Amino acid sequence: MIPSAFDYHAPGTLVDALALLEKFGDDAKVLSGGQSLLPMLKIRLAQVGHLVDIGRIAGLEYIKEEAGFLKIGAATKEVALERSDLVRTKYPILLDTAKVIADPLVRNRATVGGNLAHGDPANDHPATMLALGASVVAQGPKGERTIPVDQFFQGLFATALAPNEILTEIRIPVPAAKSGGAYVKLERKVGDFATAAAAVQVTLGAKGEVTKAGIGLTAAGPTPIQAGEAEKFLTGKMPDDATLAETARLASQAAKPTADRRGAPDYKREMARVLTMRALRAAVRRAGGKV
Amino acid sequence: MSTHKITVTVNGTARTAEVEARLLLVHLLREDFSMTGTHIGCDTTHCGACTVLLDGEPVKSCTVLAVQADGHQVMTVEGLEQGGKLDPIQNGFWQEHGLQCGYCTSGMMLTGYALLQRNKKPTEGEIREAISGNLCRCTGYVNIVKAVQHAAAAQQ
Ligand SMILES: Cc1cc2nc3c(=O)[nH]c(=O)nc-3n(C[C@H](O)[C@H](O)[C@H](O)COP(=O)(O)OP(=O)(O)OC[C@H]3O[C@@H](n4cnc5c(N)ncnc54)[C@H](O)[C@@H]3O)c2cc1C
Ligand code: FES
Ligand code: FES
Image (cartoon, rainbow over all chains, first blue to last red; front, side, top):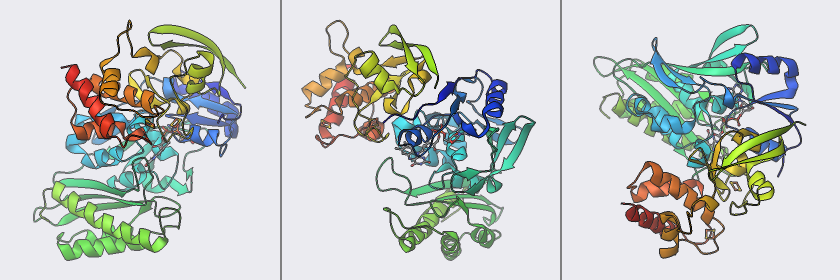
């Protein structure tokens, strides 16, 4: 299958890329790893006049801690997260997430920025970024702005990015001591999108009580879901079995999944509960707590 | 619709072509360069039959534009054999009966080859993980895993 015709642009700088987006407006789209956009163009679910490839812009691929944040360049490939010692040792929730995205071949091209900018509630990074309290940096003609991820996802395939903006960086606050997180996904086979999945990030206090909790759900509605009620319930409590079970139940209440080949809404909501429970346990364990 | 003059180094040789922006890398290889060892299976980014190495990493060439490969290195199955000698990965597939119909084989071998480039002694689990984006509808994977192990042992 061949996409319908378009013009291809390969700007060497962000400034040039932004100028192209400004010039072509709605008729242009950013091309990053292409692992969502090219399949959509091929089956003609999407059509564009101009593709602006950001893959030749230097300096958009990095993973580093700086000024209290883990900063990930938007064009960083999933495989780079998988191979990063910093991610493996300090951000295992990100490794959990990257490892279950698509398959290894797709992960050699797919980028973290693209995973968020695509605005697909079935993508795996959004829930994790919600749990981590991340922000994204968008560059536009008027300069740079920072958007918290909890304000980023606005609808099915719709984000807070304007057509003339490029997502350049993801910022994750460096977690406090005694923090841990996990991402647990149910998929039918390698390369499948989630039937359900849950991301949990917690910080524990001196007595082992939960001082901070972030919970995100994948494939649980038209946008990635932040389980605010569940987060509120867990905060301030000891993470004993009964508390975690109630937290997981509350999280599943926030899920509004729809029926598809992966299952019926009731089944998916129940899976969201089970997976949240597993993610809670793993997160507390990684934070050094007992479960 | 823009057209572009591109240069792609395929199996060590720089090749140029004048292409439409929408041309996929797999079609550049098969149709412009007449290298039909790279297959098209699903054409929807699922099967890995179209796997080639782009700058050494296995990717699905049905989901890369030819223009994106401009200035980059591509390795196809045709690049495995050197001077009439099979690469250890090819020999492994032969010795261990790692194929039946052969449709997935070029992709499987390139993925296996790339794995062995960065991990000389992969475990069975690491091999299975590495080939998890390449589908085989014939072998049941057992002999494919053995083929990669055969190649790993031969390279020790
Ligand atoms: C077979 C298959 C299975 C998959 N399974 C999963 C899965 O299980 N989980 C999962 O999370 N994903 C999955 N994916 C999606 C994959 O991870 C995508 O590649 C990813 O969501 C998009 O990243 P990309 O870099 O390829 O973006 P592209 O395809 O290049 O772009 C996607 C969209 O985001 C926009 N965009 C990209 N980057 C930017 C930017 N920096 N600024 C502004 N806009 C931008 C593009 O304009 C486009 O609209 C799968 C894909 C395939 C083909
Ligand atoms: S033909 Fe490319 S993944 Fe199937
Ligand atoms: S040998 Fe037939 S698909 Fe693998």
